[in-house]
Amino acid sequence: MRDYCGGEILRPAITPFVTNYIALNVLLKRRDGLKQMFRSEQWLSSHFATSHDGQEVETLVNNANFWSRMIEPLYEVLRIVDGDRTPTMGLVYAKLEVAKKRIIATSPKYSQMFINIIEDRWDRQISRDLHMAAYYLHPGFQHEDVLVYRDDLLGALTSVVDRMSQSHEKVAASLNELKYFHEGIGSFGDPSVIASRQKLDPGEWWLSYGRTSPTPRETAIRVLSQTSSSSGCERNWSTFALIHTKVRNRLSHRRLDNLVYVHYNMRLRLKHVQMDAKRGDGDYDPTYISYLRDDEDPMVS
Image (cartoon, rainbow, N blue to C red):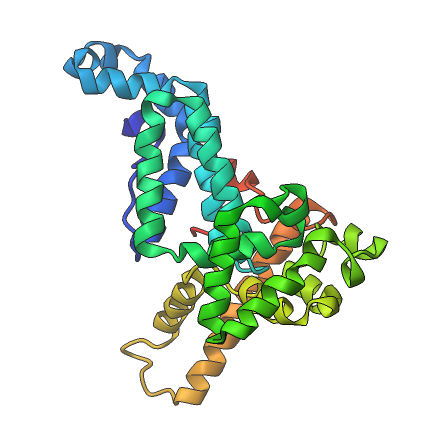
Protein backbone atom coordinates (compact mmCIF):
# COMPACT_ATOMS: atom_id res chain seq x y z
CA MET A 1 0.00 0.00 0.00
CA ARG A 2 2.83 2.40 0.80
CA ASP A 3 4.27 1.88 -2.70
CA TYR A 4 1.00 2.76 -4.44
CA CYS A 5 -0.13 5.51 -2.06
CA GLY A 6 3.24 7.14 -1.58
CA GLY A 7 3.28 6.83 2.21
CA GLU A 8 1.15 6.08 5.25
CA ILE A 9 -2.58 6.84 5.36
CA LEU A 10 -2.85 7.03 9.15
CA ARG A 11 -0.51 9.68 10.55
CA PRO A 12 -0.89 10.35 14.30
CA ALA A 13 -1.18 14.04 15.20
CA ILE A 14 -1.44 16.12 18.36
CA THR A 15 -5.17 15.54 18.88
CA PRO A 16 -7.57 12.72 17.83
CA PHE A 17 -9.57 15.22 15.74
CA VAL A 18 -6.53 16.21 13.70
CA THR A 19 -5.53 12.55 13.25
CA ASN A 20 -8.97 11.68 11.84
CA TYR A 21 -9.01 14.79 9.67
CA ILE A 22 -5.58 14.04 8.18
CA ALA A 23 -6.49 10.38 7.58
CA LEU A 24 -9.66 11.39 5.72
CA ASN A 25 -7.76 13.98 3.73
CA VAL A 26 -5.02 11.47 2.79
CA LEU A 27 -7.62 8.87 1.77
CA LEU A 28 -9.16 11.32 -0.67
CA LYS A 29 -5.81 12.41 -2.07
CA ARG A 30 -4.53 8.81 -2.45
CA ARG A 31 -7.68 7.15 -3.75
CA ASP A 32 -6.24 6.63 -7.25
CA GLY A 33 -3.27 4.85 -5.71
CA LEU A 34 -5.57 2.66 -3.62
CA LYS A 35 -7.53 1.66 -6.71
CA GLN A 36 -4.31 0.75 -8.52
CA MET A 37 -3.23 -1.37 -5.57
CA PHE A 38 -6.39 -3.47 -5.78
CA ARG A 39 -5.69 -4.12 -9.49
CA SER A 40 -2.06 -5.10 -8.96
CA GLU A 41 -0.58 -8.60 -9.16
CA GLN A 42 0.61 -8.33 -5.56
CA TRP A 43 -2.95 -7.89 -4.33
CA LEU A 44 -4.45 -10.56 -6.58
CA SER A 45 -1.85 -13.10 -5.45
CA SER A 46 -2.23 -12.32 -1.74
CA HIS A 47 -4.52 -14.24 0.60
CA PHE A 48 -6.36 -10.99 1.43
CA ALA A 49 -7.84 -10.92 -2.08
CA THR A 50 -9.84 -14.06 -1.37
CA SER A 51 -10.80 -13.23 2.22
CA HIS A 52 -14.22 -11.83 3.07
CA ASP A 53 -12.86 -8.62 4.61
CA GLY A 54 -10.46 -8.03 1.73
CA GLN A 55 -13.24 -8.36 -0.84
CA GLU A 56 -15.45 -6.01 1.15
CA VAL A 57 -12.73 -3.33 1.24
CA GLU A 58 -11.93 -3.82 -2.44
CA THR A 59 -15.60 -3.35 -3.35
CA LEU A 60 -15.78 -0.12 -1.33
CA VAL A 61 -12.59 1.39 -2.76
CA ASN A 62 -13.62 0.65 -6.36
CA ASN A 63 -17.10 2.10 -5.82
CA ALA A 64 -17.13 5.68 -7.19
CA ASN A 65 -20.17 6.57 -5.06
CA PHE A 66 -18.23 5.64 -1.90
CA TRP A 67 -15.82 8.52 -2.51
CA SER A 68 -18.16 11.16 -3.92
CA ARG A 69 -21.19 10.54 -1.69
CA MET A 70 -19.81 9.03 1.52
CA ILE A 71 -16.29 10.35 2.12
CA GLU A 72 -16.36 13.80 0.52
CA PRO A 73 -19.58 14.93 2.31
CA LEU A 74 -18.01 14.14 5.69
CA TYR A 75 -14.81 15.91 4.67
CA GLU A 76 -16.84 19.01 3.79
CA VAL A 77 -18.51 18.97 7.22
CA LEU A 78 -15.10 18.70 8.93
CA ARG A 79 -13.79 21.66 6.94
CA ILE A 80 -16.79 23.73 8.06
CA VAL A 81 -16.32 22.74 11.70
CA ASP A 82 -12.61 23.53 11.52
CA GLY A 83 -13.13 26.90 9.81
CA ASP A 84 -11.97 30.05 11.56
CA ARG A 85 -12.82 32.80 9.09
CA THR A 86 -16.55 33.13 9.75
CA PRO A 87 -18.87 31.69 12.47
CA THR A 88 -20.11 28.29 11.29
CA MET A 89 -22.66 27.37 13.96
CA GLY A 90 -25.59 27.80 11.56
CA LEU A 91 -24.01 25.60 8.86
CA VAL A 92 -22.94 22.43 10.64
CA TYR A 93 -26.36 20.83 11.20
CA ALA A 94 -27.56 21.65 7.68
CA LYS A 95 -24.44 20.27 5.99
CA LEU A 96 -24.45 17.16 8.18
CA GLU A 97 -28.09 16.46 7.27
CA VAL A 98 -27.17 16.74 3.58
CA ALA A 99 -24.19 14.43 4.12
CA LYS A 100 -26.36 11.82 5.87
CA LYS A 101 -28.91 11.86 3.03
CA ARG A 102 -26.14 11.40 0.44
CA ILE A 103 -24.65 8.52 2.44
CA ILE A 104 -28.00 6.74 2.83
CA ALA A 105 -28.80 7.14 -0.88
CA THR A 106 -25.41 5.72 -1.88
CA SER A 107 -25.25 2.37 -0.13
CA PRO A 108 -28.06 0.96 1.99
CA LYS A 109 -25.70 -1.89 2.94
CA TYR A 110 -22.96 0.26 4.48
CA SER A 111 -24.80 3.51 5.23
CA GLN A 112 -26.20 2.45 8.60
CA MET A 113 -22.68 1.88 9.93
CA PHE A 114 -21.72 5.45 8.98
CA ILE A 115 -24.98 6.89 10.33
CA ASN A 116 -24.57 5.09 13.67
CA ILE A 117 -21.09 6.60 14.11
CA ILE A 118 -22.38 10.08 13.25
CA GLU A 119 -25.33 9.82 15.63
CA ASP A 120 -23.09 8.50 18.40
CA ARG A 121 -20.75 11.50 18.03
CA TRP A 122 -23.74 13.87 18.05
CA ASP A 123 -25.11 12.40 21.26
CA ARG A 124 -21.80 12.10 23.15
CA GLN A 125 -19.79 15.15 22.08
CA ILE A 126 -22.01 17.80 20.51
CA SER A 127 -24.92 19.89 21.78
CA ARG A 128 -27.58 18.81 19.31
CA ASP A 129 -30.14 21.40 20.49
CA LEU A 130 -27.73 24.29 19.97
CA HIS A 131 -26.92 23.26 16.40
CA MET A 132 -30.58 22.64 15.58
CA ALA A 133 -31.52 26.06 16.97
CA ALA A 134 -28.76 27.67 14.88
CA TYR A 135 -30.05 25.91 11.77
CA TYR A 136 -33.59 27.10 12.52
CA LEU A 137 -32.48 30.72 13.05
CA HIS A 138 -30.28 30.86 9.96
CA PRO A 139 -32.10 33.24 7.55
CA GLY A 140 -30.94 31.40 4.44
CA PHE A 141 -32.07 27.94 5.56
CA GLN A 142 -35.25 29.09 7.31
CA HIS A 143 -36.93 30.14 4.07
CA GLU A 144 -35.09 27.97 1.56
CA ASP A 145 -35.80 24.71 3.46
CA VAL A 146 -39.18 25.88 4.88
CA LEU A 147 -38.25 25.11 8.48
CA VAL A 148 -41.32 26.70 10.03
CA TYR A 149 -43.07 23.30 10.06
CA ARG A 150 -40.18 21.42 11.72
CA ASP A 151 -41.42 20.77 15.25
CA ASP A 152 -38.13 19.15 16.29
CA LEU A 153 -36.20 22.31 15.40
CA LEU A 154 -38.69 24.56 17.17
CA GLY A 155 -38.47 22.33 20.26
CA ALA A 156 -34.67 22.62 20.22
CA LEU A 157 -34.90 26.40 19.90
CA THR A 158 -37.34 26.56 22.82
CA SER A 159 -34.93 24.54 24.95
CA VAL A 160 -31.99 26.81 24.05
CA VAL A 161 -33.91 30.03 24.74
CA ASP A 162 -35.16 28.65 28.06
CA ARG A 163 -31.63 27.70 29.10
CA MET A 164 -30.12 31.04 28.07
CA SER A 165 -32.78 33.29 29.56
CA GLN A 166 -34.05 31.24 32.54
CA SER A 167 -37.38 32.94 31.94
CA HIS A 168 -40.58 31.34 30.69
CA GLU A 169 -41.93 34.78 29.79
CA LYS A 170 -38.97 35.37 27.49
CA VAL A 171 -39.51 31.99 25.82
CA ALA A 172 -43.14 32.89 25.16
CA ALA A 173 -42.17 36.31 23.80
CA SER A 174 -39.57 34.75 21.50
CA LEU A 175 -42.01 32.24 20.04
CA ASN A 176 -44.59 34.97 19.53
CA GLU A 177 -42.17 37.32 17.77
CA LEU A 178 -40.74 34.59 15.54
CA LYS A 179 -43.81 34.78 13.30
CA TYR A 180 -42.40 37.96 11.75
CA PHE A 181 -39.23 36.04 10.88
CA HIS A 182 -41.17 33.05 9.48
CA GLU A 183 -43.51 35.13 7.36
CA GLY A 184 -40.93 37.68 6.23
CA ILE A 185 -42.89 40.72 7.39
CA GLY A 186 -41.95 43.87 9.28
CA SER A 187 -38.24 44.59 9.09
CA PHE A 188 -37.74 41.13 7.54
CA GLY A 189 -39.82 41.95 4.47
CA ASP A 190 -37.69 44.60 2.75
CA PRO A 191 -36.29 43.48 -0.65
CA SER A 192 -32.74 44.28 0.45
CA VAL A 193 -33.19 42.16 3.59
CA ILE A 194 -34.51 39.22 1.57
CA ALA A 195 -31.63 39.52 -0.92
CA SER A 196 -29.05 39.44 1.89
CA ARG A 197 -30.30 36.22 3.54
CA GLN A 198 -27.67 34.10 1.81
CA LYS A 199 -24.93 36.71 1.46
CA LEU A 200 -24.63 38.30 4.89
CA ASP A 201 -23.24 36.58 7.96
CA PRO A 202 -26.36 35.29 9.82
CA GLY A 203 -25.41 36.93 13.12
CA GLU A 204 -24.84 40.29 11.42
CA TRP A 205 -28.08 39.79 9.47
CA TRP A 206 -30.07 39.48 12.70
CA LEU A 207 -28.23 42.44 14.23
CA SER A 208 -29.02 44.64 11.24
CA TYR A 209 -32.56 43.59 10.40
CA GLY A 210 -34.06 41.87 13.45
CA ARG A 211 -35.58 44.95 15.10
CA THR A 212 -39.14 43.64 14.57
CA SER A 213 -38.33 40.62 16.76
CA PRO A 214 -36.04 41.95 19.53
CA THR A 215 -36.39 38.96 21.86
CA PRO A 216 -35.39 36.15 19.44
CA ARG A 217 -32.89 38.58 17.90
CA GLU A 218 -30.81 38.48 21.09
CA THR A 219 -30.79 34.67 21.10
CA ALA A 220 -30.03 34.46 17.37
CA ILE A 221 -27.00 36.74 17.64
CA ARG A 222 -25.59 34.80 20.60
CA VAL A 223 -26.13 31.40 18.95
CA LEU A 224 -25.11 32.20 15.38
CA SER A 225 -21.96 34.08 16.41
CA GLN A 226 -20.40 31.06 18.13
CA THR A 227 -17.68 28.82 16.78
CA SER A 228 -18.49 25.14 16.42
CA SER A 229 -15.19 23.58 17.56
CA SER A 230 -12.11 24.18 19.68
CA SER A 231 -9.72 23.81 16.73
CA GLY A 232 -8.76 27.47 16.84
CA CYS A 233 -7.80 27.14 20.52
CA GLU A 234 -5.77 24.01 19.81
CA ARG A 235 -3.85 25.77 17.05
CA ASN A 236 -3.25 28.65 19.47
CA TRP A 237 -1.87 26.23 22.07
CA SER A 238 0.52 24.88 19.44
CA THR A 239 1.77 28.42 18.86
CA PHE A 240 2.32 28.82 22.61
CA ALA A 241 4.38 25.61 22.63
CA LEU A 242 6.41 26.88 19.68
CA ILE A 243 7.32 30.17 21.39
CA HIS A 244 7.57 29.10 25.04
CA THR A 245 10.29 26.42 25.02
CA LYS A 246 12.67 25.02 27.62
CA VAL A 247 15.38 27.38 26.39
CA ARG A 248 13.07 30.38 26.11
CA ASN A 249 11.11 30.05 29.32
CA ARG A 250 11.72 33.39 31.06
CA LEU A 251 9.28 35.42 28.98
CA SER A 252 6.80 37.47 30.95
CA HIS A 253 3.15 36.52 30.64
CA ARG A 254 2.25 39.74 28.81
CA ARG A 255 5.15 39.44 26.35
CA LEU A 256 4.30 35.80 25.66
CA ASP A 257 0.67 36.72 24.96
CA ASN A 258 1.76 39.47 22.57
CA LEU A 259 4.16 37.20 20.69
CA VAL A 260 1.53 34.49 20.31
CA TYR A 261 -1.05 37.05 19.19
CA VAL A 262 1.24 38.44 16.47
CA HIS A 263 2.53 35.05 15.30
CA TYR A 264 -0.89 33.40 15.13
CA ASN A 265 -2.54 36.30 13.30
CA MET A 266 0.32 36.53 10.80
CA ARG A 267 -0.18 32.84 9.95
CA LEU A 268 -3.95 33.32 9.78
CA ARG A 269 -3.60 36.31 7.47
CA LEU A 270 -1.15 34.47 5.22
CA LYS A 271 -3.52 31.51 4.94
CA HIS A 272 -6.46 33.74 4.00
CA VAL A 273 -4.39 35.62 1.42
CA GLN A 274 -3.42 32.32 -0.20
CA MET A 275 -7.03 31.11 -0.16
CA ASP A 276 -8.29 34.41 -1.64
CA ALA A 277 -5.70 34.19 -4.41
CA LYS A 278 -6.97 30.72 -5.36
CA ARG A 279 -10.64 31.73 -5.32
CA GLY A 280 -10.31 35.18 -6.85
CA ASP A 281 -12.56 37.95 -5.59
CA GLY A 282 -15.69 35.80 -5.23
CA ASP A 283 -17.72 35.33 -2.07
CA TYR A 284 -16.21 33.15 0.65
CA ASP A 285 -17.55 29.60 0.79
CA PRO A 286 -16.54 27.57 3.87
CA THR A 287 -17.31 24.31 2.02
CA TYR A 288 -14.58 25.04 -0.52
CA ILE A 289 -12.54 21.81 -0.85
CA SER A 290 -10.04 22.44 -3.63
CA TYR A 291 -7.31 21.52 -1.14
CA LEU A 292 -8.33 17.90 -1.64
CA ARG A 293 -5.79 17.61 -4.41
CA ASP A 294 -3.25 20.12 -3.15
CA ASP A 295 -0.01 18.93 -1.61
CA GLU A 296 -0.10 21.72 0.97
CA ASP A 297 -3.26 22.13 3.02
CA PRO A 298 -2.94 24.97 5.56
CA MET A 299 -5.55 23.31 7.74
CA VAL A 300 -3.38 20.25 8.41
CA SER A 301 0.16 21.53 7.84
